[in-house]
Amino acid sequence: MRPWHVLFRRRKSCPFSGPNAPIIDYKDIRLLSGFVSERGKIVPARITAVSNKKQRELAQAIKRARHLGLLPYLVR
Image (cartoon, rainbow, N blue to C red):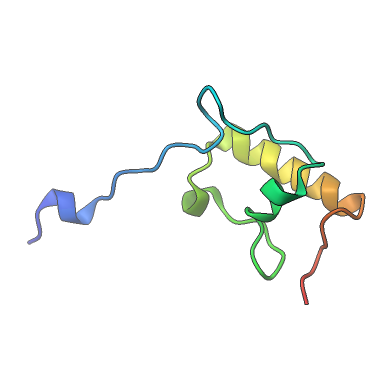
């Protein structure tokens, strides 16, 4: 049996928490494109380590940017 520190990894902190964290905005395409996969899907929070509240805000901003044509729905 492996020791417990080998089985469990420490969870990363949310990149949107803290004093100088970036603000989620639908017009900030450079920030939003980092949370979209190459297939155009929103990357889940368990991979990006974003908190639940910020993940909802991020998804809403990505959907707004897609609707306005700032982000593509599909990447070809």
